[in-house]
Length: 274
Image (cartoon, rainbow, N blue to C red):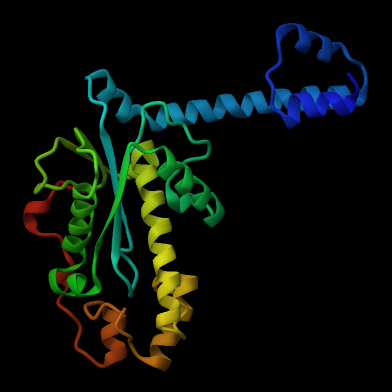
């Protein structure tokens, strides 16, 4: 083969090297052929590294599979810290052979990677659903309880009933489903990572839409999080209906007294839930 054909065959089409081809390519003294050979070896090392990373991400799932559990739902929420907008959660049940390249905690991915993976997850999932808690619910029951409510709604929205839940740092005692609350679960479980990606992309898209409804605050850029731009807008424009009146910076913008700190804390019976 010419060097151009080697590039197309082994790099462009990502075809594996047979032992015979590898020996021939290794012995080919052409600089271009050696460059192709080194690129193939690099890809092999990267694939092995990615395979090891994915196996680590599936340790919790693997234990459940070994016990005969197949319908495992990963659950995660997004939007606890923002000053504005709802809390969103996602629940995702994945097929056992799903291995999307590059999947990780949504916070570790750029927007393009999250969108690509969200599309793969939704297309391949056994079932997926999102749940939300409104701004009014956040202010009425507090952000901790509102996040639990959003996660519960996501699980209840699944078209397929889960046999087990893997939840990022929480448990949902109102759901009578076996479950594990995993601290930093979005970085330790592939299924939770998938849920975090679906939740993040869904909320980001919603906040971008709401930016047109409430212009001037920059919601499409900061998604309601407490950034310098957001603080400036609050000082200049005051609060809009999307803002959480129980959050201190919003109350300050409205000239209201601070909310007592205990209203933001989890209930005492939630100890040990992460």
